[in-house]
Image 1 (cartoon, chains in turn green, red):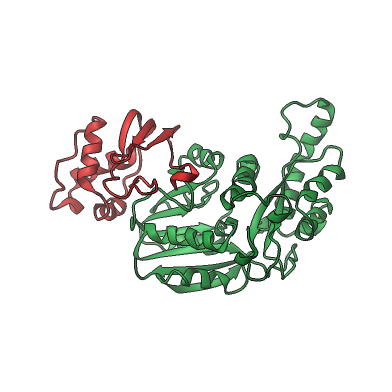
Image 2 (cartoon, helix red, strand yellow):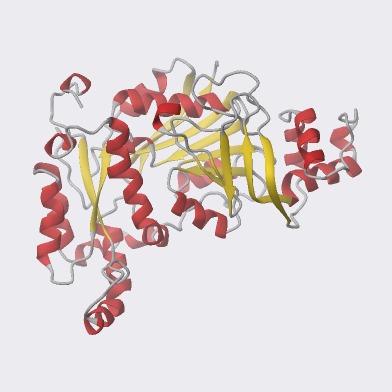
Length: 308
Length: 116
């Protein structure tokens, strides 16, 4: 990653330990591999549709064909049964969860979807574009979504906001960060020496799951957001550190903070400033913005494709 | 609905040819709105050709003029599109021969970095 790609000349989090990786490899390590590893736990924390997305889907005419690009566990695919929504995700483990739920879903990369052009009446991209590591790749991801949507088709995009003011208070000068995801300790190591410790941990697993949801993931569901202040500070600390220190310390901190420490994965995020999402989408020259807003720590917009 | 997206493979890259297929039938609720909408999106000849290879022979060779309100036809289309699932198989590009694998009902459309 060169500073030329970073208008603010702020070191990318990758420069600390991954200087030799290509952008694709950075995403492989800090996005794809992470979601592969955390898929079941991630999925267990993802069940309630966000209201903006739900309304977008529920107001689509019956019979419309849509793409959920970066669908995760497919929590939006069944929201409106009168639609035909096809999911795709880079993580085969998340897509397996979709398939188990009986959803149409395939493994595909957001930069190169296997769909025919202009096929879809609409598309959604919920909390996905912020995982691409450069402005060029984020633009390419938006372009690819627009490619598969027909003219006058609509696209709903959500991305994480820099300005979020909840549990997280991001440094407003740093847009490229690693955000840890802490797995509950129990299912992590395959070979476990102390079965007693494991048993104790297992009982605490639901609590830890809740905590990880609240602390390691700002895309939190509404109902779990309320009591975030009661959770432990361990993850919070490492979260804060990840923004200001080399990323490798995140894992060390987390590991040394507890004898039965849960594995912590560093997910890459680009935090969008206000207006940045609209600028990105408009820069394709193929859309008009129909609606935009801020919800649950995310900027979102609905764009209509005006030309191919 | 899928096409080959290997870099430089831009012509004759549709439809992907299904090979070594294991099919499974699953009943699904008829959604006429969806089927009518699909009429405008389908490459019908490609669908019929694909179905014939899979031994699904009840679709007429050309799309009926009254397709949108032809219950018999819509039912057959419904069966082909929504009730017939490829559980295992391969999708081969007719142009560059790239093979995409379907496993457990999940197509894998990922390409190697140099193919994107």
